[in-house]
Image 1 (cartoon, rainbow, N blue to C red):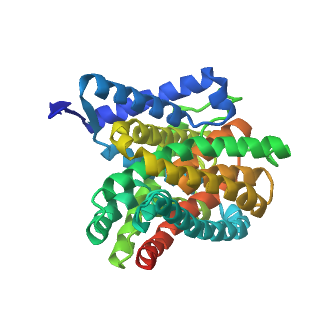
Image 2 (tube, rainbow, N blue to C red; image 1 turned 60 degrees about the vertical axis):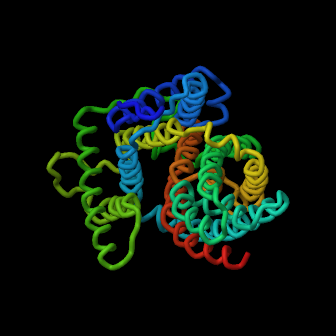
Image 3 (spheres, helix red, strand yellow; image 1 turned 90 degrees about the vertical axis):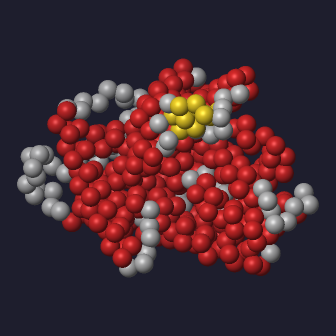
Length: 407
């Protein structure tokens, strides 16, 4: 740690340690506060938001801001998506083909609607259309990375000097709203239509709230880590090969595909160094998925500097309130019916709540919280990450310049 100019810099090791503590706090609070568990609020969201508010209070009292080195956090996302790939099988992928296409089409149409909503509300506040775009797919579906990438160009081309602040504020508020929106939507649908999983299976992420005791031996855990690392190594090679072809994808996407490839091409009875079967859909993989996703999201939320967003709250909150209304309406009246009005559809809606205003990890955390309470949904954990981790960035890269030129 070092303090310079009123900023306390926290290095990577202590940052990830703090993230684990924050995740523990979220888990304990969710156990004690029935409201949080009943509405499937993700545990890292509970702990992360509480911690970011405490940092805001510390900044207000002592004038010291905290900045974390989050380099280790991003590799946790690689771990998580690799476990999702390991849990996938071609049977699920084939059965998820039609729902995947349907969800992708809905998401693309929704992206157009999200940009139009942002532009319309911005105009009501007397702001240019580009501000509405910053409150549209640039920061919401695109997230912090897309907002940071596009804000300098918008600032330069359209003379919006605070474009970076607007983009980051929308992405941050959107992340918070997405984190607390998905669970209640799924709960309402599950209770309203009395939905249940068709079969009781091992969760893709974590352990059921009703069954905390799971027997996992140290060899099981070691074997799961080995399998994940093998997939990540192959994913790295795939990623480098694609870069050589001029195609850049996030590392977690190619590691996801590597997990799917190995799980579905290597025979189950093929001898392995560990002497154990491939750990697809084993409690150990679900545990690693839960820990990696939970710590990633806890670190993302605990590092937010909420005090930097206060001055931009007015017009931004106006845009975001309308975006939330549109997202909820799309979930209830489009996504749920189109996905089949069943339990899987309800879990997909929780994920879509994360996609629409937040990020891929938020979508997965929302679905994880719901499945821990009500049961597994392998279909949701197949189609949602494929839509939001692979296709959305390509579509957004086309839509953003198109809308900026048009409006």
